[in-house]
Length: 262
Ligand SMILES: [Zn+2]
Image 1: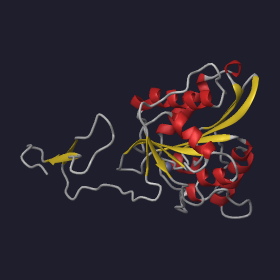
Image 2: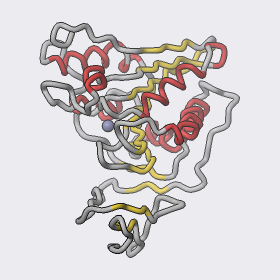
Image 3: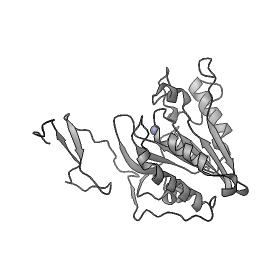
Image 4: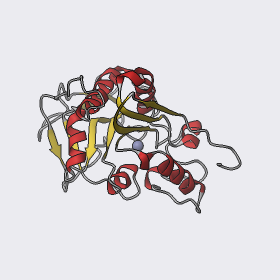
């Protein structure tokens, strides 16, 4: 219950006909991070029991109150749901919701993929966040098949951190922008999910992807957001690969008449 309203959590469980691991896919623990919602919807619709050696637990939206209010945090309390795991059954609404989700679903799984995006008005490149010191987590991160892996345990109370602590290896997938569905990236994401399922023999006949190159960054290093010092129309310069070296231009900022650039 959330202020006397029943919270209905959208869940799809696909029970494979053959035995195998239980894989948890979660989205919208931040309520306005929509790309993962679409990915989980498509994964839930894509696979039949006859396809699977194992089980898919698809939790389409975790922060239902935030999703309905189109905001990142839990409404009214402005609490970060992704600092609330594994929750507490005798505490605040946020903690009770986290505890129910964790105990009923996540704790029963063998591995997990948790889909996020940047916060609003920012964008993140498509990458995985994973504790590369944990071999089971590293296995998922590499099988996901994208080039950038941000190494680290994740903050306390995050779904990923708590699940890994409890022996459920989990990675976070960060994909582009909040508050919109960016379906141009959907096919690639579905391919990455299939690769993880192949690696864990949930889809034993499918190949495991290889991104071509991989860079693991920032276990203890500094990470930061880049913010422009002036307003204007931005033209991004980086690409085709999302890595830049010192001195490379990232973007230019123009006025409407293309007169001013920085
Ligand atoms: Zn997030």
